[in-house]
Image (cartoon, rainbow, N blue to C red; front, side, top):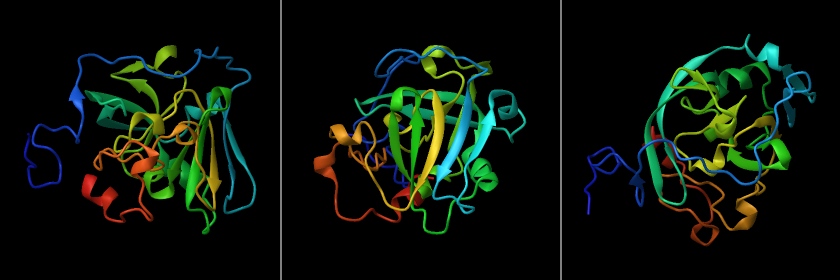
Length: 212
């Protein structure tokens, strides 16, 4: 049994119930979509501050602010691959360009084929949440989410859809694809809770801050 190091993390650097794996395993549900740049865009809609929607073409995506985040990737099945360097658009910068309404508390990240992952707004705006276009200095491969992948390092991987196409602001939480199939609505890796039967009434407001 590993002890905690005083920061709330396991002393081996991994969250509860995780084991380190080499490389970067490919894991997703369904086929890899075909990328058509002339038809591709990224949209933000729902409970926006202007009551309107926003959209960026693939070319316009390159004009958005960029940053680099180095973080691990945790799968709810219990595997962790470490030391990923993500490059792309910080989610907080995108939300500054398309601000949510004051009453927006959650968001749904939509990917190809109607895959959705629900997030608390605090998770979406976290400093390390990024809309990644590159990994370790190279463009994402199709299998790993090209052209755009949401990465939320403090949540399990099912909260970060590959092939991201839109973000919908919500005024109340609703389950996404895996949440409808029994996975935890929050998916915070520090809690070690993966499944809906482990959910409690009300989220711990300090949980996100302890992980940062």
